Image 1 (cartoon, rainbow, N blue to C red):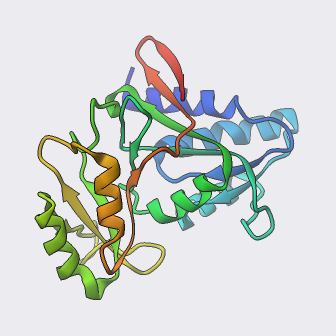
Image 2: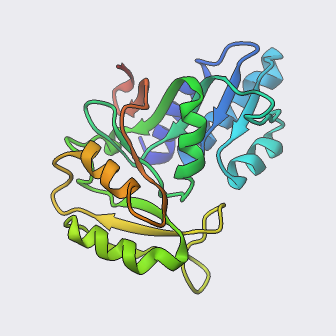
Length: 229
């Protein structure tokens, strides 16, 4: 199976968890997009009634395109289920997120959900976080040099993420920049590193999601695995 097929399978499995009347979190990224597409089919064919809080402008645009009703955390302060992807998942269901630079809003939405379900293919599973992917850090532009120096002091190779198809850095939905921090060999203590990065002046948030995921749907060549805490 291709990565596209695996993402589609994970998306269908996630959409199958949704029940009539649920308030949802709509995550960002290609795997979550597959879930929203599968959910839209259920809405059309089954008359399923749902509302969703998007985690980015991209998720909002996709939901509107698919005809999925939207809400806000002001209107709907508690969500039944949040669906989102991840760049890495460790055995304790801790995550690295943020290749789509939407980690701040993704964390806000996930924290307000009764269940936070993460959708990945088998390639995203790692023994410890940081093995394959850098940790994205959302930074106030003025603080970028300071944050980079502090990340290097933690042992990371850190650099501003450059935009694709444009000159200059990636700009988040909050108007901030993303610094990618790569830790060779992965993180010995992801929770400690998460706290240290969060405490840096000028950091809004980062992509280490520790203890937030309640379950992970993993698409493999052999089928779907549903891992719960």
